[in-house]
Image 1 (cartoon, rainbow, N blue to C red):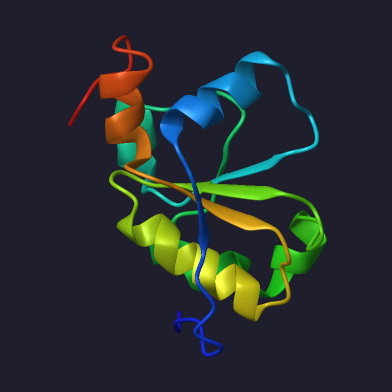
Image 2: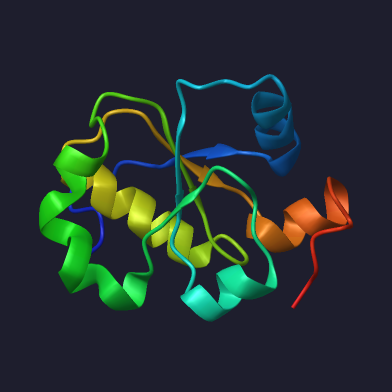
Length: 119
């Protein structure tokens, strides 16, 4: 996976804003979680599609058929680093409305839903 060659900054979304969008039942957003399966088994948020970065070669070629490149796409990981990399890659693939979830599932657990385990 390569970075964003255009140097375009990736838009961020806070975990609080994510929680509001999820509780409102916003079906228009596309949700991608790039963490590994063992991380998902420990802690997850309903509605996210798991695309582990370690399996990049298995799903990369299908990304524009799996998701609408023009749809709002929110990307999650543990702390926000891997999701930022994925967000940049999605933009390089032609996705036009990508947002990285700041602080990842760790921040979501701390600030929004303490029933989600921290790890």
